[in-house]
Length: 616
Image (cartoon, rainbow, N blue to C red; front, side):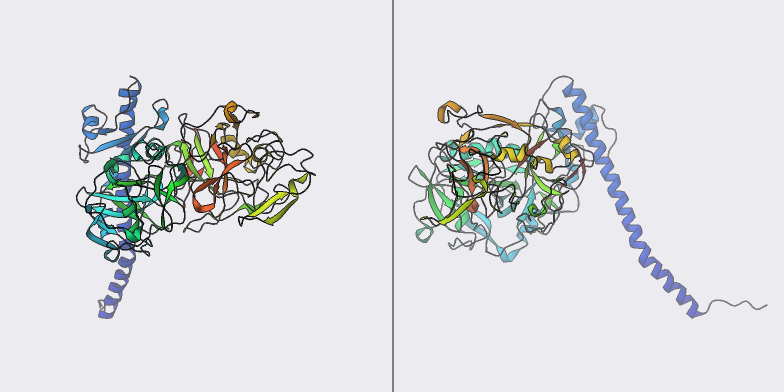
């Protein structure tokens, strides 16, 4: 019998088949190996964080001691909480605990997670040579300045908030950023001295304390030399006389005017935003500060403007992902997300969550949030934002979209919920639903009741004029107690997690310190039926609260009355960043709710594009 071998053609065919199999299999095998390594690293990191948790419980909780800011791996090893590890023993576990009396609020983060084959934020920002000018003098200091109107890849996600890089600094190894969002609206202060201003107090007491991973922030030098000329007459400063070192501040005059061209003055740069925002730059007139919007102007310090905070990050922070655009910002390796089954109060202020409003019968209320990220919402997935995490571990949320386009049976017109207090008569047959429109002298559309009604939009003489829940034409009643109330839009499981919250009905407005407002009802409003406080499931935003600046084209109500007026509720005046007490316009409504400390996460990453899902 003749033995025959393989022909050359057959061997080549086998080799081709093997090569084809290898082409498919090898990448998959390499991916499996890579995924296995990542999972092993994640388990190792989680074990280190778990060891740090046991250490805190044993060494600190049992002894009533305040938590340290960091715990080194060397300390954990010396105390017997970890054994041999390949990790650098000088690495730290970072401890974040916002409230000493609520131990569940502590968050542990192993900084070894930040180390790997990543580029620094500085590398990525400075690689964009078309939009950065190196070694230019701004605010009397040599920096690398980002400029231009069309620059679109300097967005960074830090602490659950989107920022824009405005410069890098080789002298102090920092990267300067401004918040892309008008975080709040408040008065500047009694005069234009930043050191004693209400703005500085708010930035440090409210905003900075709400940030995550503040260990990444380094001091920023802010120039507060007074400027008394408009940009057309301005000469760039050679040096700054009055300097402040702060963890958080505001844009300066020169920050703003040199963002179109780093060398030549032009206010048409990427910081040109329509809302009026305070700058940190004063004028010689103690009663005025500089304000930036589409142009620069001055404003009295007693007026209300938006706040765009400015910080500096260490320039060695690493970027995990993203393209630097608004829809896909650079995400730092330090940006953490809650794992499945963790409590929501471990999230960051500024993170986004889905709430279930599946009992909402009005699909017309599903409006698209203002963002470069196009998200289609359904009634069981309505986006909310975390605006505070309270000392008891409860979480306050604000609906990200205003209640608009509501039906005629619960709103005076087809676009807003305008009513706040009752007029005499049956709510179903009274003048609530009948109104006229006229063109006023100021150019505003005046809307007013036709018939026996006693005032514009709401009638403070019928009912208390405050936010209340027992009268049929008060917005508090619609939000909480009506048969078709906003509260009843939530699924039953959602209602189980929403808890009643006390709201302080203090007065506020132009010239008010956000933290020291009038809470005595006998001082201004002796006819109040509530003594400055109400406990409800659904409320409205406070004056001076986080994330109330917004960029809407429609104003919205605050829960506070306007200072020195007993016939109006206060609301944000469209996108100008001002507060008004006008009663002839119809603002929209942004409901707020508070969730139980025991609400836990089932998925998502907490970003606007991927909000957390909850066990509701």
